[in-house]
Amino acid sequence: GNSVTQMEGPVTLSEEAFLTINCTYTATGYPSLFWYVQYPGEGLQLLLKATKADDKGSNKGFEATYRKETTSFHLEKGSVQVSDSAVYFCALSGPPTQGGSEKLVFGKGTKLTVNP
Amino acid sequence: NAGVTQTPKFQVLKTGQSMTLQCAQDMNHNSMYWYRQDPGMGLRLIYYSASEGTTDKGEVPNGYNVSRLNKREFSLRLESAAPSQTSVYFCASSETIRLAGGYNEQFFGPGTRLTVL
Image (tube, rainbow over all chains, first blue to last red; front, side, top):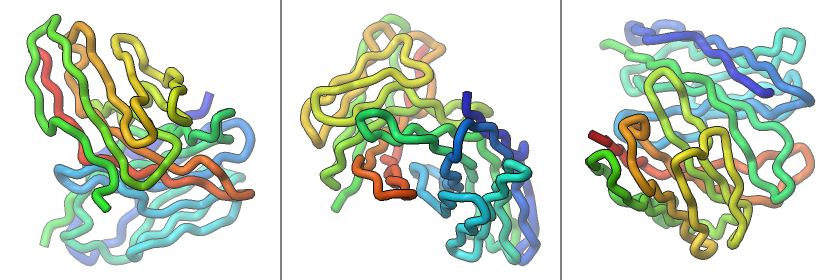
């Protein structure tokens, strides 16, 4: 079945440091890939997505490239801020169900803390 | 628009008690989902509903029941709570009609933190 493996945390960085959170996946077919972010006390929000190989998703200074050859979707940001402190989840979605629902498979999450 | 709302925000139950978690969305989405989030486990799908009147099991459905009351509301019921059901529960919704090569984003509620003693 489909699965997602992401870098174990927690990750602690200083402000303006470079961030990489690794994510690899196993899936049949051609899944769509996502990064979700969860700020303290809140639900998940979609951060960025890529729906086909070599696509680059980007948002709020974060980027991730869909690499089919290495089955990876690593999250990067060149200069993190204190406000980026959150839990980041890598996820994939295969073909929709017969009824049209999207079934997401999540990684375990990586907690990022950015210190001033 | 409120998006996806969940009630209650917090709940403490004793083993064997029952309760229903409520979820509503105002985005006119067809699909709705229930997930549980446990430390070190990420989110796991409990049940989902592609449309009013239909529900399907996800990855971890045992011990739960769901009702898609109407297009807006999707409730999750624990008939006899167990300590293993201590978790944070998230409801989400998404559109259903997928454009070619596209994807329908899931929108999440703020969660319900449930403790079963």
